[in-house]
Length: 204
Image (cartoon, rainbow, N blue to C red; front, top):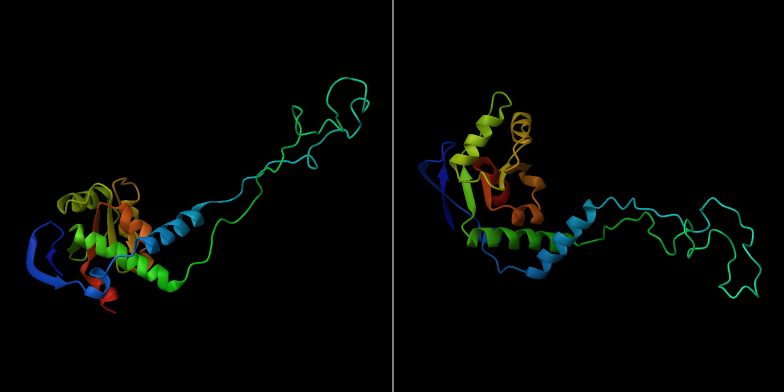
């Protein structure tokens, strides 16, 4: 698949690059995408939820009333789960929601997501954007020029501090390094903007 290279002003440079079929032209595997996205979202969860059970509630353990003869239910202590202020039954506890996923499945999922982006013609290749100083206005103008101002994802070869600072206050787009590209980010953007230098990573 051939894609035209644009400059930072959104104009064609007259050059074309070929996207490798092994990455951008495979048979997509939807189940691999599902598993990879599921793992990504699970890893974002803090898992710090906690509720006190009856053993952790501060209160007396004295029997509230006698066992029989009251006509009501039996109560062992004021910390009973059916009383107001009592402990919770089987409450949430801190846990890790992450799970293991084979590397080959993750690679297949990323290639499938990139293939879908290529089929939708949502991939744009641009010349490397270099900024001498952080300036959100310049980054917004760049994303507007290439039509990626709404939920666009700019893939850069290295972590450029000025680019990161320039995009941090812009809600419409994000920046990521090419080696940190994941399936969720690829599918969550409406346009995938790849810098020309980042294509070397895909070719390797």
